[in-house]
Length: 196
Image (cartoon, rainbow, N blue to C red):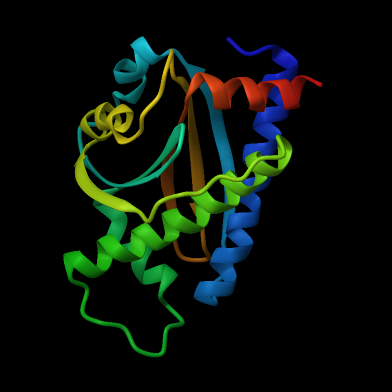
């Protein structure tokens, strides 16, 4: 497990990345967004599915893979259309609210969040994270979390962080679940930077 000092530093980094993503989302959508990291915790790999358990409703998930890591962002499907509508409220032209458009717009929101957090973490350890394009999926939270380890190659035990973020605009509040898995090598590099 990470030290208390490194844990606090990591929380600050993730929170900073999430805050930066709110600014980027506002620029893209023309709508003011606020984001707040509600909780963040390290989860042991063997307890990942227990930690991923939650409400049984479906989620929109987007995976972003990189060498030695994977990010997963999930939005509840129940209010996904409203979130997309709020995100695109200032758009000059919008297609019909098809499932394809909803999923791809949510993937773009996830892309902004993930890149802001990834860039913050990479800067902290003097590294570069080359992320894939999003791979989208819809399913129960536990099933999406279960699939995350299959999205990247690693040696040794995976390092897993789970965070819960609240996103708010003037007209809408939405939860967002965020999972970060790192290989032992990337974990050690990040924690060494945080603990120095």
